[in-house]
Image (cartoon, rainbow, N blue to C red):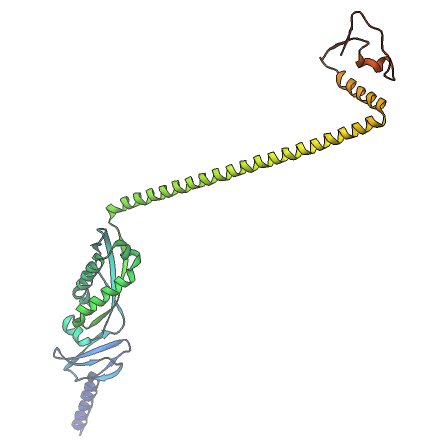
Length: 301
């Protein structure tokens, strides 16, 4: 009886072990390939609990996520004979685990198998484009063209190249100095042109300002001459009116003005006869008398 229970226990243990060995789990981010003695038996792309023949079948797992593929840094000569050092990378995902297993087998070998294909397409596509197109104008379309061609030629590898990107595209070191000197010369030329344009504009503004000053001065002189003429005319009119009202007073007033102007202190000397008409108001306050003559004259200041 004890032997019977031991046999039953052994059978149950072997059954549990066989059940455990026949079950495996495929996760959400995985796909699997069931192999029997190295030969593919089943491709599993859906997640969940799966079954296989215990102790006979093995399972290889492959990532369903997008993976990175770094390429080697390489020199590319563009169609305009410009040399570029290009460092690029590709992003891919495994779409057919069976083909991938048959032609690549391990993800670690993707760099050896698919990498040269990507690098070759980079050299071919970028070599047919100009430096301006690679760096700026058509960079996005060129990357799509490379990815499409790699997928076309590498469809038997069981993977899809989702995208190709350039991490760095630089000129060779020996060309950097020439490019820098050319850029420096361009900046100096632009600065010289801008400085010349500024000088020309400054001269135009200065000439216009001088012209405006001349016009304003001329207009001010014209207005001052007009006002001065009007003032002198008004003065003469007042003098004429005053002379018409009282000729004696007017002559007295004008004589006083003449004395005030002629007899100022200074170095001016005049030699006049004492009975000169100029001194008539000294001889007679009414201005009508004449003085006695002097044989030697008079020195006045």
